Image (tube, rainbow, N blue to C red; front, side, top):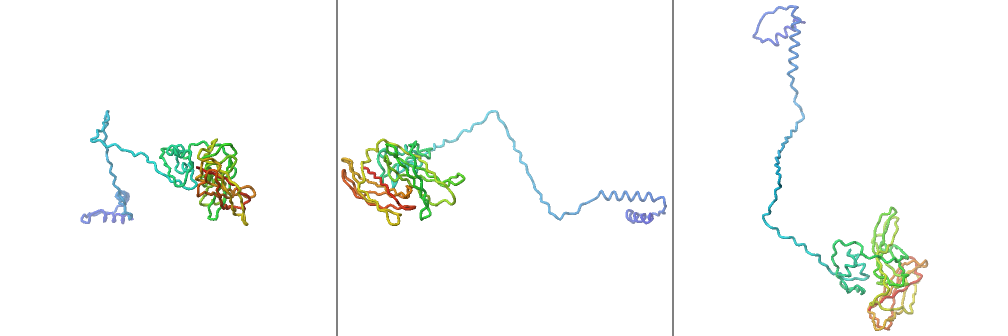
Length: 344
C-alpha cells in the first residue's frame, strides 16, 4: 500500500519531465504519510464556495453631511417690500321673512343667536306680535351661545304625549297650564328622545300655537320628528324659555268667546267647533284673531289641536262668527278647550 501511494504522489506532484529513480524503502512509510497530510491540509485552505442560485439585491446608501454654523447674535430679516394690510369684512346681517307659527324665541333658536340680539336689531317688534310676511333683521353675533340668554320662568309642564302618525313620523304634544296671575310670553320647550342607555336619539324645539299663555288657561306646543325611533325610548320635555309679564301689553286686546258649541263626530276622531268672538276693547279694532282648539280624550290627555285665523278685522265692540274642525291623533275626543287671542 505504501508503494502504491508513493507512486500516486509521484505521478501527481512531480512533473513528468522530472525523472529519478527511487527504490522503495520501508522506512519511507512515515515520510510518505507526512507528505500526504501536508498536501491535504493545503487543499482545505483553498476552498471556493459554489455560486448561489438566488440573486442578490444590493442597496447603495449615501449620507449627506450638513454643516452648521452658530452665531452668537441672531440675524433679523429685513423685508424688501411692504405688504398691504388684510382687510377682514365685517359681518353683514340679513333678513328673515316671518312664516306661520313663528315666534321671536323660535327665530332666535333657529339662527343660534341670543334673543336680546334679535330684539336689539328689531326694536319695533319687542311689544308687537309677529305677522306672516314681515321681515326681521337677523344680526350676526360672534361667539353666540346656542341657547338664548333668558332665564325661564318656573312654569310647570302638565303633559307630554308623543304619537305616531300615518306617515311614520312622530308628533309630540306638550301641554302647559298657566296657574299664575301674569301672562306667559316667549315660551319654548325642548323635547328629547332618550334610549334605555341614556343616550339621546333625537331632540326638537317645540313652540306654542299662540303668542301668549293667559292666566288660568292651557297652551299646547308641538314638535314633529321625521322618523319614529326603533326600539324602546322615553320622551322628556324641558322648558327652556318663558317670560312672565303682569300685563299682556297694549297690542293684545280683550276678546272673549260666546255661545261656543262642540259637536263630536260619530267615530270620535274629529269634532266640529263653532261660535262667535266678541271684541271687548274700546276704540281698538282687532286686525288679527286667533282661536285655539285643544282636544282631550276621556283620560284628560291632549290628543290634538287646531288654530283658527280670522280673515277680516273685528271692530271694537263687534262680534265675529267662527267655525273649525279639530282632529285627534290618537283615541277618541271627549272634550275640546278653546282659547282666543287678538291683536290690534
